[in-house]
Amino acid sequence: MVRKSIDVVIPAYNEEKTIGTVIEAVFRGLNDPRYRVGLVIVDDGSEDRTSDVVKGYFDRYPITLISLTRNFGKETALLAGLDRARGDATIVMDADLQHPVELIPQFLAHWEAGYQCVYGVKQHRKGEALLKRLFTKLFYLVLNGGSRVRITPDAQDFRLLDKTAVQALCSIRERVRFTKGLYAWLGVRSIGIPFVPVARPNGSSRFNTRALFRLGWDGLTSFSDLPLRLSALVGFLVSGAALVYAGYIAVRTLIFGIDVPGWATLTVAIMFLSGLQILFLGVIGEYVRNVYIETKNRPNYLVREHVDSDTERFGVRYANGRDAQSDRVAAA
Image (cartoon, rainbow, N blue to C red; front, side):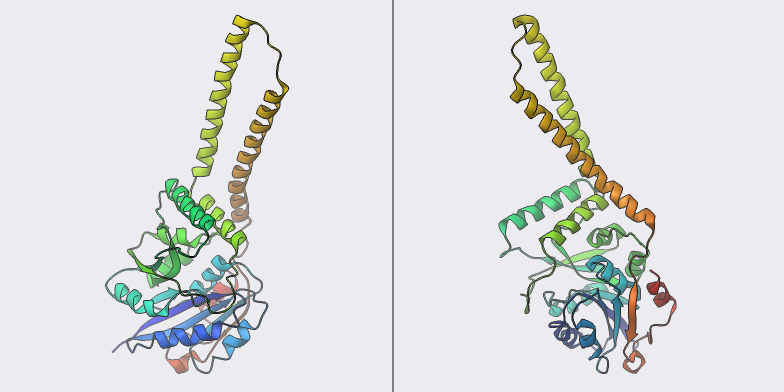
């Protein structure tokens, strides 16, 4: 029987306390004789011993370790791992053990049934702050309202991708990346599987509020022109209101004469309109920033170290990391 190969890509940043448990869980959960499993771990510029812990498992499991020169961010680290993936299918998951490995057999079953993308959908957001839940709903509402590509609300990076989907995704070399949007943009046959994230066993997520806001804004400016359209609409409404008010003042002056002008009204109007101008210039500036970053054409990431365990001994298809794709990784 010819076994299909499955690669598991895990971006990791300062995960020395959990990465060993993740490695054990992946190979224990994918102990299926129908598949050959390889693990690709991307150390996204960790400041702890994440890479050393991973290397400690080289003699037990088929693992590829890609260490980036600095912290490029999760979206870019994910691209680095997908660049190295060789399997007939690739599974993407986080290194914090919140993505249940027990769900992977369902992913594989749907893949065998013909789906090219199988992804986990967070079933509920109980336990999260009310403000975060409201902003999340607003984010997806605005994102899908201004984009031709519909992104499933609460869809996670925990997913399986067919080989053709991985190749298509890696061909997109955007620097300002919103991978959830890119998954949807591919348009491949997809299905979502609801799940409840497992509690993180150690520490707290390093994907803080600031990082979430930055990722969300990058998603809006990458996949939606609604902020620009809203800017134009609000500008039109404010200008229209100003013309109506000017007409009212003109008629009132002709009928009742010149009244004593109020400095408060004038000051508030100036401050309000000036604030709108600055706000909308900032929105336009974010889109210009994206264009600026893309036109510089810098590599998506730089690799400090790229090492494999003795993968030939484990029967997986890649060894020593020397092939056309790995050459592209080093210069990607």
